[in-house]
Image (cartoon, rainbow, N blue to C red; front, side, top):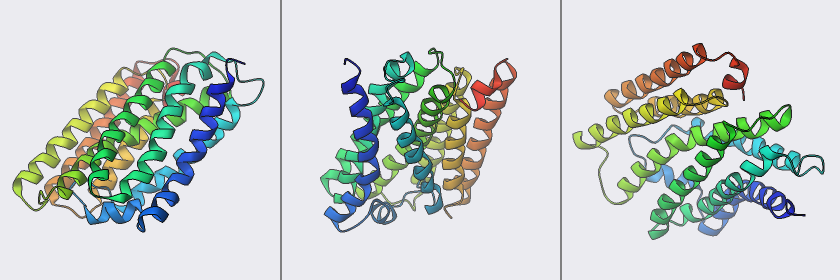
Length: 255
């Protein structure tokens, strides 16, 4: 019975983050994408990059259902990762409702995304040391890796959008310098995570690279696009370097 609250929380939170976006759009009369386009910064990915949420949502739902099976509820991998991922899923659902409201709620959403990223990071770190096999290995690892990887980019994109909402013009040299510095930071953080990873580094790197290439394709200044591509290259090199030092490359690259 002690596993029941966690199991239910994961299922409810996974479903909530799927319905959060349409609910937020219905309440605000505009979608997350509408607000993002209105406050587009130099580090806002182009529209197609956000399709990664479909993969993350699918993985979240699949894992939520799997960990709820009677045979799975007591497994250590689910116990160790369940609450952090439930918090991340629930936080994302709240963010999806809050962000489209605009005004002061957009700044609340900024705080939320840092909390969501922290929760996803806790799950990712815990997965590094918990042995598992089969779907209990693949589902939480791939889901946590993709989620944390995307949030690594999305956190910076959210800061940029908040800056634009505050009246900071993205057309200045200072904005370009900040964008390049932010992309260098993303590359450094992602490389550090990869070099310290034992599992799920592949999904994490794929999501970061996807987001960085989305920024490069967003028709911003050339300096920013070049910085985004270079950042993606750094992440790829870090993943390759880590893979060379691991004997169990399937766990590292797949989950």
